[in-house]
Amino acid sequence: MSGVALAGGCVAPGVARAAPAGPPVVELASGRVRGGWSGGVRQFLGIPYGADTGARRFLPPVAVAPWTGVREAAAYGAACPQGGDGQGEARSEDCLVLNVWAPEQRTGVKLPVLVYIHGGGYTSGSGASPLTHGANLAARGDVVVVTLNHRLNLFGHFNLGGIAGADYAASGNAGLLDLVLALEWVRDNAAAFGGDAGCVTLFGQSGGGAKIACLMAMRAAKGLFHRVWTMSGQQVTVQGPRGASARAKAAMEHLGVGVDALRTMPASTLLGALSARDPSIAGSRIYWGPVLDDALPVHPFWPEAPALSAHIPMVMGNTREETGSLIARGDPSIFDLTWETLPARLERDMVSDVDVHAAIAMYRRLYPELPPAQVFIRATSAGRSWRAQVIEAEARARQGAPTWVYQLDYSSRGNGGRYGAYHMLDIPLVLANTHEASADTGDDAAARAMAATMSDALLRFARTGDPNGGVLARWPRYDLAKRETMMFDVATRVEVDPRGEERRFFGVAPYIQPGTY
Image (cartoon, rainbow, N blue to C red; front, side, top):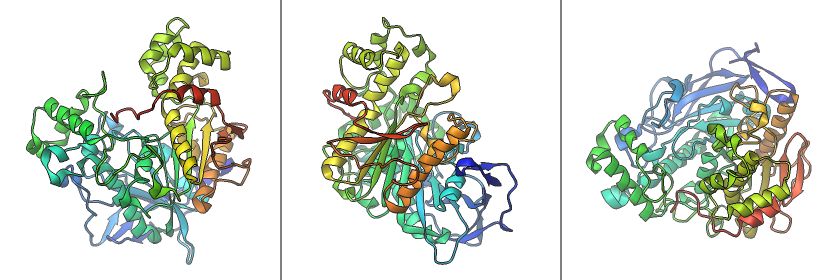
């Protein structure tokens, strides 16, 4: 793909730009790969970092076997099997693949490496989304960008240790162990792309951020990354072994099979367990997610932030209207709510166990201009992942760990902006991909300026461990005295303890990560 620089520094596809002659070839620890060019940077897609997991279902991953000759890296690899139609995306248990975008290598130059972990919770997604295409960020920042696939849902988190024996003791966190293997691959191969294995930044949105929180507490991941930037993705607690085993048994009962059949049945049949009912969460399908075990011996952010990663600089952010996409975009009836019908709907969708009438009264007093639908979105957003972010930020502040917090207020452009600054909206901004058709940021001067501001902050952070500089106002570290937060918007600014009254209101109720009980 060719490209040209636009205002704000982004690279748009489809415009002729001279690229070096011939496809680039790189020598990896496992063998040579041949890639292509995108936006003036080298592009390598579908590189295997691990062996086919189908032959080792539910077991820890192993590195890919070396190959001879030159392997083509011109197309995305398969994603893990999951629900939904995938819109033509290949899916297979042979899914331990990654993608690399890198500027031309220069002698004596070692570039920062940014590894993006995709969202979709622990159940869906891949590193092949147009919104996470890495060419623009690599070109803009002169950095190496990596996206990847790993095991998800029951392939990555089927806790069989207490059922099938010691060989399956790590099955509850197989997907996280895939990420560790991918980071080991980055350590061993970064230099081949001109990258610095000693300067690796993890960044991820939603489930990607949650996975990063888990990696921060895993001994096996120690030393494999050096900064973290999470976007609407927190993991305060994880499943205990009792709850995770109960979910495994419920899935097996739903399928009507024993352990031996689980090992060998077709992946498409195994996916039938995705419709099984969760034994702990009323009305929900089974929660597939990380588990306390030898690989992840502590809850990531409870009762404190992990000591293992206290020295690692961290940026964490959320969007103001998270549930604008998590709930409202899939249920337009939200916009028909009245003050009379709002309480019952909030009772259904509020994660934090607080009095909904008191919550409505608070929002009507703080934001008298908001209609019922927007009060619903603000209240459900505050009681969900924003609450978890506050807990993580507070834990890091008590630890004295270098931490910066942001909130995205920049509103989406589709549907008259009624979904607000919703969950996922910061992905095309941080990756400078506002030109993509699926980006709801717009691609006008304001959108490109917002993308430049956010992506440049990420790039400075990746280089130095501090996001400050450029056009940003001074961005202080988060502490419990002022709780200063960068508010990314058309007019970006720092606020002291934004939404403080909301924070105190929801803070009276205990918080347990949904699905981890």
